[in-house]
Image 1 (cartoon, rainbow, N blue to C red):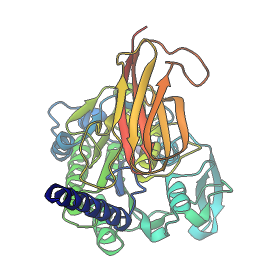
Image 2 (tube, rainbow, N blue to C red):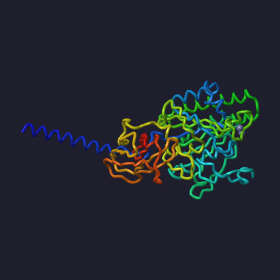
Image 3 (cartoon, rainbow, N blue to C red):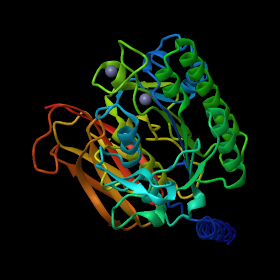
Image 4 (cartoon, rainbow, N blue to C red):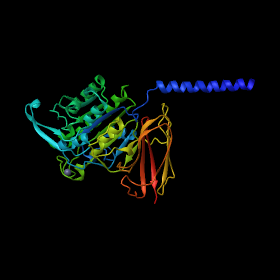
Length: 415
Ligand SMILES: [Zn+2]
Ligand SMILES: [Zn+2]
């Protein structure tokens, strides 16, 4: 009797535990975002040549960004692979592609020339797909006539960002950015700093260097502002880049295909970004917008670039304190020749994607893309691409995305 009583108590305790777990699952909102990143801040420093920026091993003029790089990641081989001037390169950052530009006379700007992009922009993808108001998508820059929305019929003016075009110096733009953060707390913010390019064109070397030092300190101050704000701290990814560099033979100009014009900076820092990583994988301007989409959870369907997955935290095997947990991904055998089996457990039914990327972030194969019931999933991959072609030996990234999170794994093919 006594034993039976004990057993009954035990099963009652088990039942209570199950009940608590069920209640927790109902109370804890199911995470629909895959990353810890909830907000993205993009900074563009116009016309900063890499040799005076993070390309300088001593980081003489950019000590602030060098310090941030130690807490985040740099793509050392980052290039402008198209037009090395502002009016084409900045839209390429927005669109994730080298978009066509349409020029028109804008009555809102006293009839002066203005532009729109052919392809949708990061602002439009973000606002349309996530149904966000303009106040949640802010673009700060000095007082200029801002561009107008893309001509894409699915996107366009309804999804254009809120422009704060104020003042005449980078310091003015920074102060406006700080005010926007405090007052609007947008989930997506772009701060555009123009003074470095301007100082370069004026042609006084010391002024050019001073403009870089100022921009560098503003980036550091911006990160400090974000970390001191509870809406942003610990859940914001900041990306700092340039539209183009400057000639390696003449700092006053830019616009051709020389290495000085092409080689630019990509610094990333945030909760999903690896710490202290210097990536050598070749990347370029169109990869920025898909990276923002990956982090915030929207697609960038007209982009030609691909997300910088190699900068993201390797989360395989990492324990998450949140319920429900991201599924753990097992790959065996690894190295594979060429067959390998991927196994993971889904705690809840979920939309899922299981995909293979190459090391430059190109999607090679979609193994699974469907709604999956809870339970263990086991799937064999044959080492082939989507077109049936056998992939060559080497390392590939496996990306498992469910409604509760993203996991990455690496598989090596040895044929
Ligand atoms: Zn310029
Ligand atoms: Zn050049």
